[in-house]
Structures are given as structure tokens and as C-alpha cells.
Image (cartoon, rainbow, N blue to C red; front, side):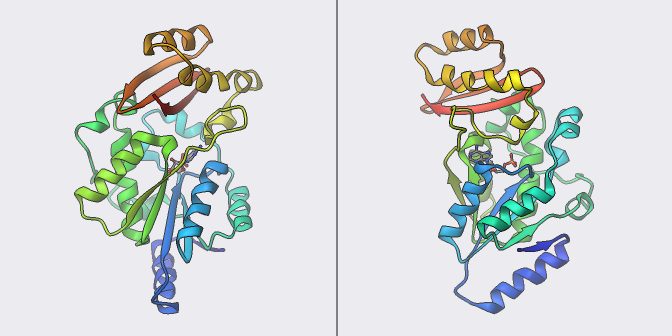
Length: 255
Ligand code: AMP
């Protein structure tokens, strides 16, 4: 696997692909690292649909409204590289902050409606950071298709909307939410749960997909020891975010 650390290196790699074959297509998976099967499923989906697949690892500080959350975010870079290599990913783009933010985030991309509800209401500025970094990455990478997980339902919706609104050349493709065998949605933040919290965590999915009204589910979550950030039914889905101790978990199910 080629590891490209700068935009200049990436551009060289991208033109080498185009020179290699005019029939090639490039698929792209953006991540913040601490890779698990959820990320790898997107890489595999891209490998099925494209001749080449690249992933990126960039822990994007501008989407963290809580500095502690950023500080504690797991960093497993060399393991991540091994996992990507093992499944046959062709390239990894892993730029530094200075490469991606020469403007130091003076320029931002903002959506004004859907980004203000659900996670956006509870994490002010979060989606400005997400949309800005995704726009930067897609502009640099110049992929034919980019893959995003349904685990982050609201994020996927906003990225699709951005690609449409700005006539972007990359097709946005959604991939299914991947769960642990006990039902917990896979997330890099699961690594931060204590052993006791990890045992309790699958109740989050069990409660939101179980019977009852939204208010009953909210009460059941609180009774089980979660602190509910939000739980809402929208467009045929139930979307929720909770804290378990210090760790914030999100999930969504058919409603
Ligand atoms: P992250 O590293 O959390 O920014 O996630 C990178 C990409 O992987 C995003 O498109 C996420 O939606 C996706 N992803 C994360 N966890 C999962 C999961 N459990 N199932 C499917 N996709 C996921």
C-alpha cells in the first residue's frame, strides 16, 4: 500500500493512476483512524466497485466541539496501516493539519438547516468541521466515488446534500451500519469504554430498536444508566445519541 503524507505526494500518485489506465476508477473512504470493521466494510465495498481504493486517516480537530474528546480519541496508526494492507487497500492519504488547513479554518463550509438539529444541536459547529474537511479531502483526492457509513446517518445526508449543492464530481455512496455481535454499533470510541460500560453498551441498541414510544425508550435508556443527548423519530428512522460515562455513542435504526 502506498502511504502519501502530503498533497503533493497524493497528486503524483493520482496522476500515476490516470496514466496507468484510462479505464480505472478510484474509490475513497475518509476516516479519523482507530479502524474497525465498520471502516473496513466501506473499503471492501469500494474495492468491489472500483479498480483502485484509497483511504484517508486524518483526525480532524475542527469537528470536535469538546477538546477533551479530541485529546482522548484513540490513535492506532500502525495497526490501522496493517489492517488496510491486509484487506488490499491500494493507498492511504494521511496528511498533517497544516497541509489541509493552510487557512487555519478561516474558510468554512456550512449548511444552515439539517446541520442544526440532532447531533448538530448538541455539538455546535460539528458539521461545519465535517463538511469543510470532507470538501477539502474530496477536492484533493479526486475520487470517482466516496463511501460513507450509515452509522453517521445525519453526516451522510449532509455530505450527499453538499455534493449536490456544489456540483461535485465525486459520487457519494452509503454503506450499511456494521455492528458488534451483541448489537453495539461499531465505533472508534468503543475503545474508550470501561469493561463495565462495554457490557452495558449493547442495551443502547436493544432499547431503541425495542417496543414503546420515543418517550418510553428515553426513560428506559435513562433507567439503564445512559444519559440521553437526544432520541428522535425522523423520516422512518429512530436516531439517538447517549453518553455512557464520558463516552458519547450514536446509533440509528428503522423506526
Ligand atoms: P470516522 O473514522 O468515525 O470518521 O468514520 C469514518 C467513516 O466510517 C464514516 O463514513 C463513518 O460513517 C464510517 N463508519 C464508522 N463506524 C461505522 C460502522 N459501525 N458501520 C458503518 N460505517 C461506519
